[in-house]
Image (cartoon, rainbow, N blue to C red; front, top):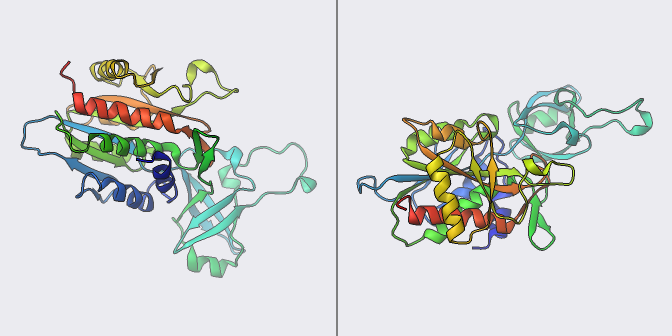
Length: 340
C-alpha cells in the first residue's frame, strides 16, 4: 500500500465537522477493499465490521476521526461578503489574506479580506473570527444562488511532498490516522485473528467527539485502539511536551486509558522493533479515546498517535514512516491480542 497516495486521496475532499460526507466517501471506498459492506451512518461516521458476532471472540475497535476544522457560513451581507463562525479550533493568526473554498451548491473560491498595511494604523493584531469577511468576487444576489447559511468553508491547503520523507497539507489531522487504520487492515488481510474487528472513522471529533460516542456504543467493543495526531517538536516548542518526527508512533499513557492495553502495545512494539515513543498525559488525552473508554460498561482503550507539525493549519506535516509504524502496531495488537 502506497501511504502517500492514500493520504493524498483522503485529504483532498472537504470534511468539516458536521459535513463530513465528501471525506467519508473517499474513506469508505478504501475501507470496502477490506470490509465490503462498510457504510456511512446517519451521523456522518464510516463504520465497518469484520468477523462474526456469534463466534465468541471479543471485538476490537480500530478508530480515527474523519472530520477536519473549518468554518460555517452565518451571514451574507448586501454587498456579497460572507461572515462565518468556527467549526473546531481554527487558528485566527492564519485568517488574513488566505484563499478559501466555500462548499455551496458547488464549490467556489473566496479570499479572506484584509486591510493593506499602507492604510492601517498602529500594531495589527490577529483577526478574530467575528471580524473576518470573505470575498467571493460576486454580488450578494449571485452569491445567494450558490451559498446558503450553514454551508462549510475550508482554508485551502495543497497536499504535497516535503523533502523525501514527509508530506504537507490540510486535514492530516486526522486523515493520517484513517490511513494508519487502513494500512493496519492491509497487513491483517486474510489472517485468522483472535478478535472480531470493528472500524470507526468518527465524525465531529473537532467539536466534541460526538461521532465517537455513538459509533463506539454501536460497536459494542471489548477493546479499542484509537489513533489521532499529536504535537511534533518544532524549534519554538518545549521538547517535553512534544514527540519527535521519524521516531515512530506515540503510545499514550493517561488515567483515561487502559493500563493493560497500553502495556501490551509497548511490549509488542519492543518485541517487533516497531519504532515508538511514549506520550504521558496527566488527565484525559483530548482525543476520541477518552469517550470510547467510558462507553457502555467501559472499553479497554489504548491510544497511538502520529507526530504532526503545525496542527490545525493548512500546512500540517507528518512523516510517512510514523503513519506506517502506527498501522503496524495496531495490526500487531489485532493479530496477537492480549493473551500474553
